Amino acid sequence: MTDSSRHKTEISLLERTYTFACSAEEKDKLERAGRYLDRALQGIHSQGKIIDREKVTIMAALNLANELLELRDEKLAGEQSVNELSERLEKALVDAPQRS
Image (cartoon, rainbow, N blue to C red; front, top):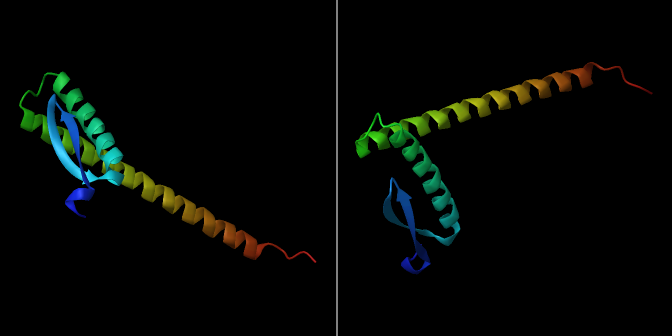
């Protein structure tokens, strides 16, 4: 990707602005991810128990990683359930009496 195809995008996190370079195709996703992360950071910061920015960031990262892992587990469980149902359906079709 050339410098001319990269766009600067500003993301606000805990009332600080950071500038990132990304492609035009990635811009919306980056901004959406930034808003999501900022809400997570603000939620932790607003509780007042953790004030240090680094600790707030680490806590948000751990929370988001946990959320991701839970979603992956749910996806795998869903895929496994679909596979089991598919196998049962195939077996039922094979075992079903043939109609003439």
